[in-house]
Image (cartoon, rainbow, N blue to C red; front, side, top):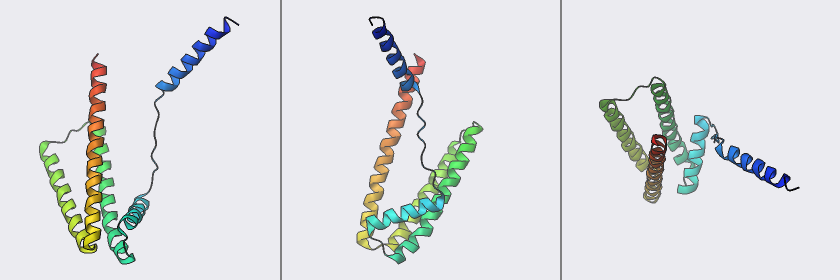
Length: 152
């Protein structure tokens, strides 16, 4: 009995360390672009109280945005596989294109939504941007910690 207790403690400790070290692969749900668009429009309908006509006008805008985002992700993955780093000119061009798209989206949303809905939309967009910035900062901090750990 005395010999059994230390063996159980060792087995338990070993099991916990192996479980803790397993890399957890958090898989996201893989929705199609049409499904993503539909979900986004429904969320906006709930948040902004959109009419049926407004939903029909917004859906193609969201679909186009999702398609461009998907193309960008694919292009970025291919460049990463080839170990290509973008030049400052390409980054500049991408940022200009992104800002132009945001301006166009904002103008079209302003035409579709009434003033109260548009104000709500702007607040939602602002919150989302703040959340993105926080996530980027967290990722940078994790990378810094990992680099420091690897350097030691």
